[in-house]
Length: 355
Image 1: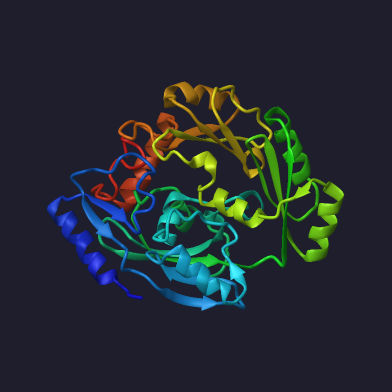
Image 2: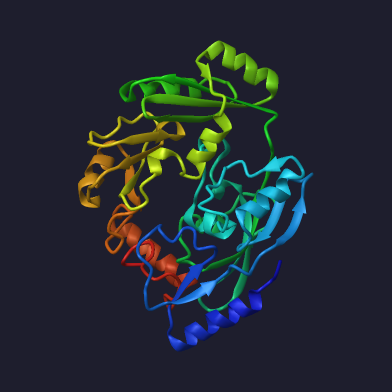
């Protein structure tokens, strides 16, 4: 465990002075996300900036340095029977909490427990001037103006270097059961939404390879009663299935080079008509598509059902990978970027070519 803030601050100040760009790296497990990194930029590594700063199990609050691995965090929480309820994906043992927030990554329980953004109470951030700033704290509160802590979710390091994060943590559920049954893709969205609308302890709803999987978690009596009422086959290896979906190790994700598209839609929206395999998660709000296509071809399909699409992995990462934005929103994003990073030194072009 080590506090490397002074070293990191010096590197940022030197880069600004020299006009050098910086690629921010933690464990390097998410290097496949976003646009291709600037080959001429230097590396700013947070791999040694690790450790638990504060942990209050009774208050359900954890503060850690951004380079701390998810594996280490979950081990600390497990000793107190607690967990990260947003189920962050592990892309290897080196996956860090800082990268998880920067990429806004959450697992199968997202529709019920909220995303990583929803669990963030406060952060510390190095801006492009080398200033070490604090935003938020260790309690949930209403915020006027920009909620800077949560603004970092999905910014992919373009607004600054996250150095420390305070998060809400939660107790582990007492019991978990996974129900599985065969179902066609054109039937499953309505079915999952109907089940999710019931006041039952559901924490996962996923469809893949012609089968729908529902996870129940919570008090043992409630889980058992719901499982009996809903029916379906009880999956013996249910926990393993959800872990594979969470970490994207399920067979659906096997080819890391093939283009993997992420559709973010209303949970009840129809699935776009495309040839190729699909996985439907988050009760239909997140739909994965594997297939050769271009962003310009898929954007109209996503917009037609009120959603967005992005290239999550594989494919051409020298072009845009995120859905295009209107000029008004581009202007706002550029202004926000300039306020945090006036010289544009952090992760240039990683999110968009124009940012």
